[in-house]
Amino acid sequence: MTPHPLGRLLNILDYALSSLRRRLLKNLLVFAVFTLVVFLFSSLLLTRGALGDLAGRLLAAAPDITVQQMVAGRQVPIAASACEGLRGIPGVGLCRGRLWGYYFDSENGANYTVIGLPEGPAGQAPASLSHAVEGRLPQPGERGKAVLATAVRQQLGLEGRRFFSLFRPDLELLSFEAVGTFTGSADALVADTILLAEADVRHLFALPEDQNTDLLVDVVNPLEVETIAAKIADRLPGVRVISKERIAKTYRAVFGWRSGITATALLLALSAFVILAWDRASGLSGEEVREVGILKILGWQSGDIILLRFCESLLVSLFAFLSGWLLAWVHVAHFQAALLRPVFLGWSVLRPQFPLLPPLAAADLFLVLAISVVPYLAATAVPAWRAATVPAHSVL
Amino acid sequence: MTLRPSYLALLLFATLVLVAAAFHADVAARRHEALAAGAGLRPLTLSLGLADLAVSTEARYTRHPALSDKAVVGMDLPGAIDPFPSTLFFAPPPAP
Image (cartoon, rainbow over all chains, first blue to last red; front, side):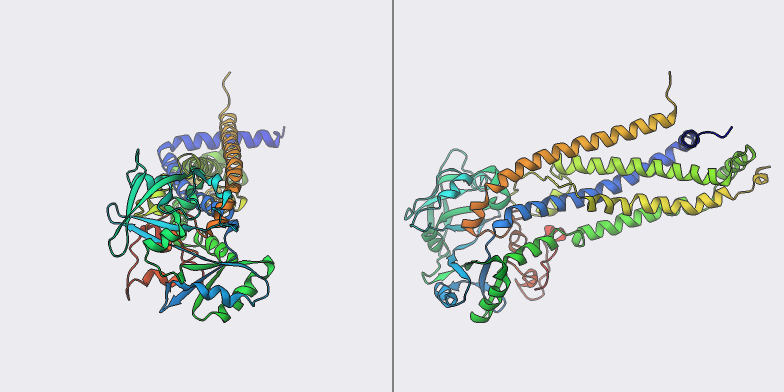
């Protein structure tokens, strides 16, 4: 009687499992290395995916065009009158100067980003900002008040206090009162930010009245952003123009898998699988030859033996892939990529706390499958064929 | 009654797939909440003109990759090397 095809497959699967159990230590080692490589590579992909997704979501409202003045390849303040030069360009909406800069805190080695709070159309502080701030914003014309990120508050040691001081370039000490704190959900954007009134930023950085850090330009028709960016670059000498599309392109590249450590990890992962596959493909042990010979004497066909070897490889690689992939998700989404954080935070003194929630991307899943399970299965084809063609009398 | 090994393996595989699916569903739900919170930050990005994520604050070009350029790494002095670990993780912005 011909056995049912599924029953035959289950029988071969049973035999493959007992065969794996006979070489338990070796197969456990292969499984552990396979899982580790899939875990590390998937963690990198997922962390990048989560950061890229975060950038896409939070920076969707980034300025249409940012204009920076360049001198000798470095950014310098731009003349406040530069907006006047853009008035004649059709399609240009609101143009405003922005004041911001970096403040290095020599006490603790932290870098803060200090931003000037723009006034609303009627000379008001933008009311819409109050959703991102606990406490209050500096009122128009109010000096010496600040909104801080939680991490900055900690670095300045302001547990129960409200007042802190910053140095001007001439070492004059300026005192500020913290009247608000950015909410935790804003950490991914402003974890290192001190928000001051524009006049305070100008005074702190000793910027002349007729200069701003850069210009923000709104474009009426979003389809014309690139054209208007090119016109601005033509009209203002020595400027760098950064369009919204360019910001998106930068973030796609910055968190893309083809760059930096991810490309290195991809090469390392591939090398690990080549070594694993080499182990499978290199020579048949005497024990394996004897086993195949006995199976053939018992009536197994070459096709059955190829299927047996395929089942063994499939079991090891699929279980290792699934374990590694699942561990990577737990690592990134639950433990906030604790193993990779030291790499992408580097020597940052301020450690932003925001959840990493990668989107489930089919491309990531197939990329990991393609560099792990597929080459491993492909590499078993040759040894499976060699094993299947062992003549039965070779063991006699 | 003892299960045959192949059934045990299939059961274990199905359990792993189910655990993975449940975990993915949990992350998707948390992501949905984060999307709503992110939408509330739109006015902050708009009014302050923010163009970058505050992930790594160790160097200007990792704090603001979109507002820096490719040459900025070596800009501090001629022939300067890039000592910052996070630049391993962040690729340089694409050429214009």
